[in-house]
Length: 381
Image (tube, rainbow, N blue to C red; front, side, top):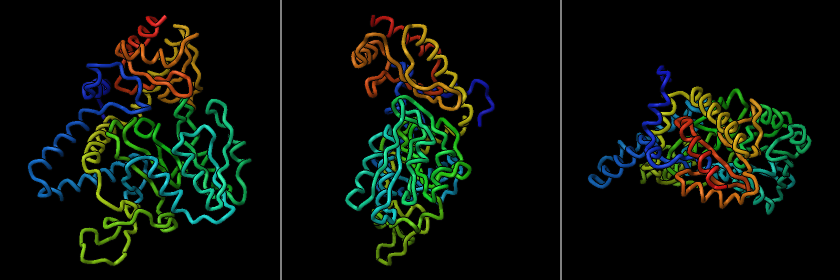
């Protein structure tokens, strides 16, 4: 963790996007950090010049990223799998769990489609998906508990809602699952990298998150956590040359699976994306997730105050433990998509989800960036 009180200024200096945009869309696809960009360039140059000659050195980034992922979530590296995206991680569990006809999954009706479709797709195997109603992503834990029964096998929920930014009590959701002898899956993509998490303390059984949002990496490289005692419980999927302990010894065709979460990394890696995510995540951990979280919430609190002053209505919950890096809002009597396009023309990147405007800054941003957004909104009138 950086001891420099102005660490965020160093952080900002490593974000080339600030020279071009006031970028409030990290909840969609974040701009690359300089560290990630540089790692990709180094990788590309090495492959262009040397082909496979340096492959063993490049493969070390896989294990480096695995160790950083374990550090980020508080697990053992053996419980981390490198995946392409959150969807892949969810599907691994959805398809690999030993379901029986009549089992069910409990999740929320406000989930991003990637945390709905893989469970719904189990209907052909006799597995029911129960959707717990939410109010603008606000979750009533009693309703989650009521939805669980003796046939509930997995409870799955997002750490942070993608539309309005509601931040769930992860430990409380996991406790509900375990109370019903079920397991808990956490879609962590909207929180990992900017909020601290200890998967053991919180009771998380499975987790997945792509690196292209708050971790400031490229698309196509992400992390998955599988609690050690569940690795053998899941049916091996996507098995390939890289799933076995003798990976690389192609003459040995014994199906001797790795005893770790890495058994689900069946084929070749996205080495370019992995190098980039490792570099970006290494910087975030060096600055410290706690300071990043504190600064991010300070920025979103300031943003909410300024939006309120300019006549916007904050849609999401801003209670202390529920607020996040996502701010959803309505702008009076305005078409949200037209406002988004106008802001883009003014050098400000925001987004629209479910008919509401959505701003998602990162900890490297400043009051000056908020000024740009407010000015763009004022000029729309």
